Length: 79
Image (tube, rainbow, N blue to C red; front, side, top):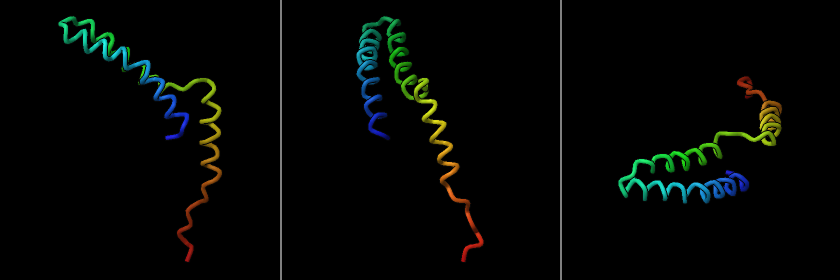
């Protein structure tokens, strides 16, 4: 995990934790609307992990292109 990915995850957890805690407290109080808050917290974490921003897309394309170009072909004929 890269440093910026770790920082991004930390920020997402900082926003998702209060919503998740409120959801748990609401469920323990007997109110079923706590599931909404738990879903919101899960959505924050899922978006951070799986949704790419427009600024990340060129970097992902360049990284995959560099991987294709930089990897030498496997030679089974080498002795």
